Image (cartoon, rainbow, N blue to C red; front, side, top):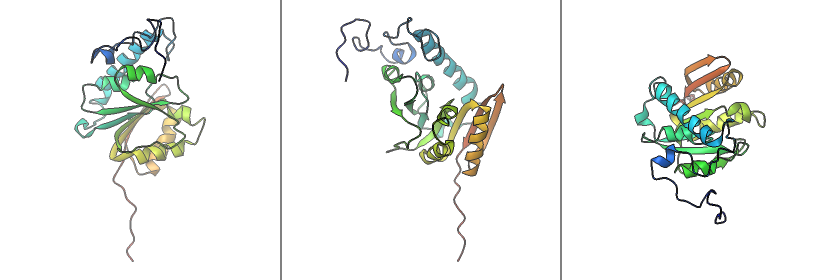
Length: 218
């Protein structure tokens, strides 16, 4: 709960825009005098993030990865920032959980203002998945930051737990981290569908299998 604002430019004084405009436009209380997460004036930063994810999803994720989107319902963005990834999926029949890591800028109010779901989380801890597992998990430059605080293996095992069998993980990160993640998911019997690199930036697309340990006959 926050106090009723008195300044007309402060958050909470006016209703958000009507849907779908609220998911596309910067909140009225984002000021150009404030610096956004990526270094631009906050409203411009917000818009650039949204346009970026619209391009990525349209040009890459929709067709280039071979995802059967009819089988995707529950989606998670492990590092949501402004919620641009979820906003770019708004015309799809999916439900997106936006996660703001506790050591990232506090952008959850912006995600809520857009009419999206979200929460804070420390990815060095377990994630409460009740009552759902996830069909698609997205991690944009998250793991390279996490491994400075805790072991990457434990985080990937947690991802393995929350993704349903035949679910998918998309990772965008530096190549050193991509190689680490790829090695770990292979040890968990995931299948690598795509691994791509350009100028030390990598994209990894992997799918969880229905693998089970072989039971030896007595």
